[in-house]
Image (cartoon, rainbow, N blue to C red; front, side, top):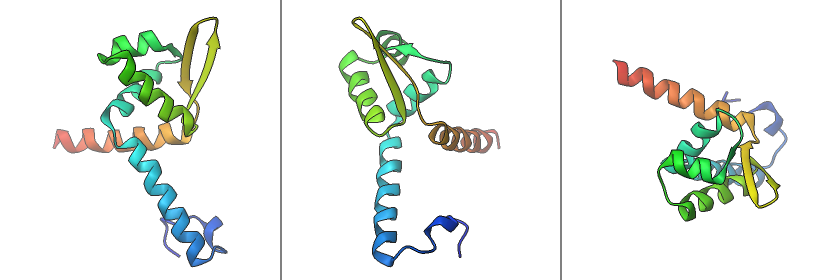
Length: 112
């Protein structure tokens, strides 16, 4: 079996594997937006308010909020509210690891 496919999938039917591939594709589609990667980079430093993320991202609050909502909906980010202030943090370390690995590869390619 290919190393791309984890052993947990060995008992899945072809139809179930098609569903796996669709969901993986959707996951990478979500991360294909540079603004979302920038938000993840910002949150690597720890929990931040929406206002702090907006300021550091250099984007509009509406745009940042849209991306935060998408990342939260997929479980990549955690959100908590304190009064009227909303805080976001990394909620899925595995996703963060994927992004860090790919970023490291790109940086290495840029150096050559």
